[in-house]
Length: 137
Image (cartoon, rainbow, N blue to C red; front, side):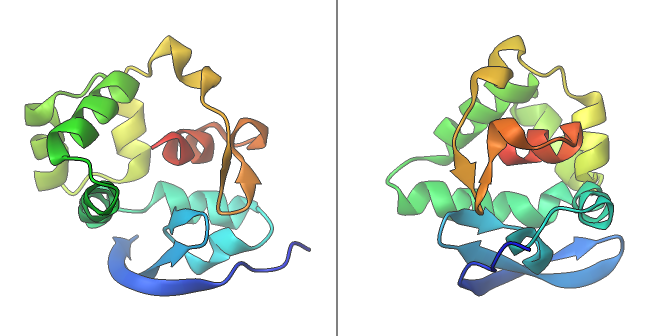
């Protein structure tokens, strides 16, 4: 079993109607504490139920802390998903889960070229397609 990474709770998000802590780990934003341990089907199911609107403000906080803008964040999201700013607002208003978010997305064909490590996992080695897509964000 993989050792947990040190992390601090930085906010909370709704996952399947339940308010759970969000963590800012040593490798970046992690939505659930279980993301710091071995992958499992349950973990993938929990990730699918995360409400995008709960995590989006954390993406904003992260990019702004790196000297970037919300417009740049939205540009990256549009490149990955083909969602323009209005589509993002709609998904946020609907409280769409990551599962719904990525079902509606037209994933960029070059997304598979995204590599690296997030929360201790190699993005290109993540087996569950939805979990991998969430990690692309």
